[in-house]
Image (cartoon, rainbow, N blue to C red; front, top):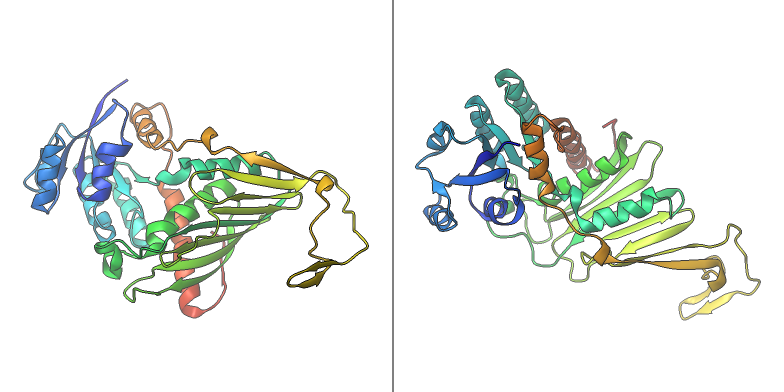
Amino acid sequence: MNQYKAALVGYGGMGRWHKTGICKTDRILITGAYDINPERMEQARQDGLKTYESYEALLADREIDIVIVATPNNFHLPQSCQAMEAGKFVVCEKPVTMSSDELQEMMDCSKRTGTKFTIHQNRRKDADYLAMRDVVEKGLLGEVFQIESRVTGSRGIPEGWRQYRVAGGGMMLDWGVHLIDQMVMMMSPAKVTDVYCELYNVNYKECDDGFKLIMHFENGPSVMVEVGTSHFISAPRWYVCGNRGALIIPNWDCNGKIIRASEHEVRWEEEIIYTKAGPTKTMAPRAKDTIEEIAIDGDKWNSDYDYFYRNLADYLDGNAELTVKPEEAMRVMKIMEAAFESHYTRSVIKCNI
């Protein structure tokens, strides 16, 4: 097995996380960094990295095999193409580009130069996602018809470029790209047939600080993806309904539960149920002896962030396919573009993505 050296362009929060929190394999060593901010350059030196006087100097270093692009989104295309033209394999942070047209430019550059790239779409191995997907794929809920995926908080958009549209800010490009990618990978090869989206500008007028997206997969469930930065009470991280039961995972500790039918026949009670909100029969709870509750143990599931770089090393050795392919990122980018179109036209966008 070979060992590869990587350098970072951009040493802010994400860039430093690649160095200190993600890349754990000894087969890929992050040895250098470049940033336009002198304070970040000093931090890189304190973290044991070689620093460069310019991006061009980084690209000219023959010892560097991989360039990790961790700059604001509007720089991804030019910096990735510049690295590929220098013969460096590129790992680009998500979202890979600002649009599908830009992504096509990047793919064309890769083809022209013969140099490949991948995208750090890292939340495919999140513990909560793996726990939910395991339940669904084992058929514990029966035929699933509804999936709700949410990430919400109340602290607004982090300070910096994420607050500005020109830099590729906003929650659709920041968090939507992750949650849509999770659903696309889970439902693949089924395509998305229609999209409806509402973007929010609660406290930020420059770019979206939240959104609610509904998309349908062919012969599959309705999927709702919601992201919010002004939610003082969070709704469940996952809520999934099938014709035999339902799942809830409230938050990122991954503990949750399944409630499902233990009998195939529905037994209706004759009497009406009286509640504080009034009488009901249709919405009365099932008899306790007709359902079972199964706990989802969060301790069973762990997020695996290093898998991305382990896979990359295997790919560079010629022993594996890339775990994140540009074609997959293109699907996600086109779904996000359909979401933006839906919001601005206030309409359902028919598609085949």
